[in-house]
Image (cartoon, rainbow, N blue to C red; front, side, top):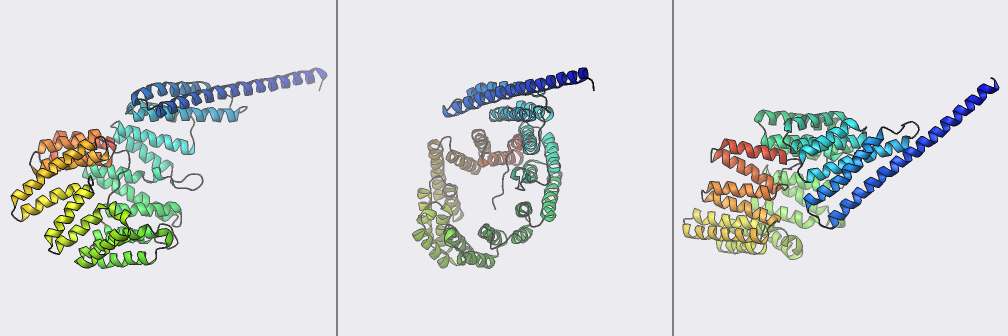
Length: 494
């Protein structure tokens, strides 16, 4: 090799090194600017939250900062040489993902669902995402589509996610709960709002998904989680024997969830299968095997034991346990209106109505605002109507109306108001004021759209308009609203 060629190669090498150094320096500068913009956006958002800013104002100000960070990262991302500045490229890419995600969350909180769909769709197609980032973005896009009223498109995306990210575990093998519960969510939405054919189809999809997960690796964490959801599906669709069998397959005395599962099985035996002896044996076995660390379970198990004895007609024995719980576990009893309700019921079933009514009145006063207290007014009215005392029944209904109205006013904006509105609607329904009942239920949803009570109210309102008022168009409209609202999993209360 001649001296000239060697000199030329040296010059080229030095030039390449200088270019590489310049590129690295430029990439570092881009990353620094991206981090600075993201930091400013995060700080502005936190200051707005701490300052209790109006939501719309917070969205406007913070969204502008996040969008600035997002646009910068997107613009500069492709100008970084991935080979010579790999770390900087990955970091700027992550910041693009982070800024877009934050921006979409802000718009979602402001119910700008179409904007969320546009942002997240562009993120999936324009920014290289991997693993949990791709999964999170896909699920967020599905949720935004559902909230925007595009359920069919959301289902397509949900189905893609279930196939693309199977099994639902992260890189360390931990269960991805949001993805795992997706088929259950899709079934629940169809169960509440879909046609019979859609319900059957989604139930089949969910059962197949969870059964396959359960069988793929029977000893894994994801298999146990899938079987637990299968049990919920079986119980929620009336196949209680299958639910019990599935829960039994999960029982392991060494597992921390053993008592919870055993209690769940006992609850199904008692409430659904009416096998009170079996339930009692399970409750007592659990009580006998409690450790000091499980002491919080004791009053709950005693209460459930009393309730099963009550169902068997063992009124004195049931009441004795309830008195013991009230005496020794005062906090539990005072926080559990069902226990006081059971106390009153024990006297009623024994034929001691005067004492039972006293206990029911105590339930109304001491557990003010609970569902059980509010329902007791209507229960007492029904009792007096049944025994031929319409005057007393009317008095209890009048007191119910006053009670609900006071609770709604005092608990304005809280879940107490939501509960009161439900019972106000029920009261209007009993008085055959169906339009008023429907309006109350709609008001409940409008005031509390993100609560379980709100969604259930909308479902009741739709049924009322369809079945009692023959207003199919109104019912369909409410069902459509409910479908967009059900972006979080609703769980059966069995």
